[in-house]
Length: 437
Ligand code: F6P
Image 1 (cartoon, helix red, strand yellow):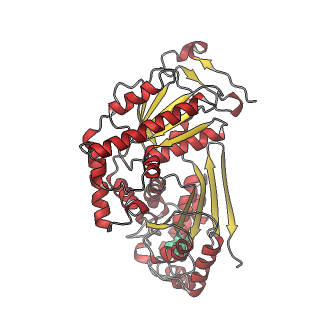
Image 2: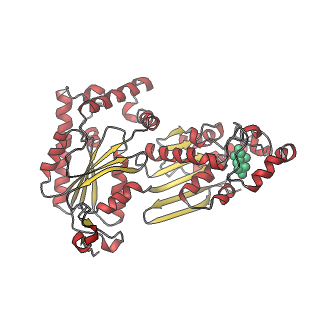
Image 3: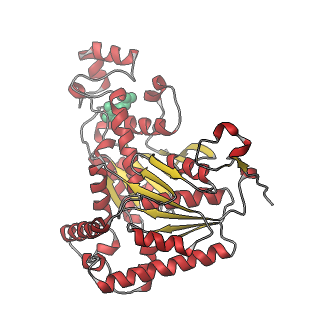
């Protein structure tokens, strides 16, 4: 049986001014086993609530905390065969829709209640909970258990749009054309916006920018079990499995030419097929690529072999732009522009191609691409990125520390992939083959 020890602020007079009330050590044998907590997510649709809920649940479970998510949307889809994706269903002026959604919310509160009455420790109510009324109902259901509201926002318009684009490509909207689906989802969000009351006087609340992964505001009035741990989880990137793949061989690769938008060779297509075979039994709901043909041609056969898989192309993952050297071979650069070859040789990370990019200038955009990946990926456990040599080096270095000057030399072959696993307890990465050379 795991032991736990609660340390109150009176044990640490220096910390008395903080409102948190309780401090837990992050080590496994000091985590609390008996404390109950209700976490209630708050936010508009497509603002990263479910991803956040999933992240908290998975990590607490790893700490041997018994935690369960109660998702109102999932329950709604289970309780009715009717299609509830029409925006009217979500109108606050539609009594049938309101009644049905209230019913789902009530059932989930009751389920969460009985879970905590039994041996559950943390119940996460994953729903929009945008009205005070809805939040009061939660408070009334759990009068003796602390309630911790986590409000998710995202002010990055582009990420929101990308997220909406992905959501409307899902099964719920498959009966509509892309434009109709977008319109329908947009109207649904507008209905929620029309009744949105941000967190205000709730006793324990935290406002999170779910795209940036940072905390914007917090107020904690009660003793909230696992508080420090949850805070830590919110701001930590958790990667169950990230498969980082480089595109297959291209005609440019054959000639050692850089940049461009070349197609895959026969060997490249065979590599893509081998990847598809290799990952058949691994569920990959989304493959992220760049805008270049070679990454999409590599991703296509993999996606085709999956039950359900979409490809999302992100310009942030485009290969380093070699400016005036685009389309040249390394040999040609050495012969025709030796000053460029030499300068790059001296400082490969810091060198920026004339009219192009360098590793140093790619840093920001690649980092932003990764933020998009985690925002769009929902709570899928497996993520695949099909990128390029330089871009993959930058992606890898975002997770695994390497001195900057070493990053441009990270080995990035086309017949292997990197498998990364990262959570607050471990960081693991491995280069694995998916076919014989
Ligand atoms: O050769 C393939 C390629 O992806 C080029 O398009 C790109 O310029 C290059 O690799 C990046 O590698 P390095 O920084 O080692 O030149």
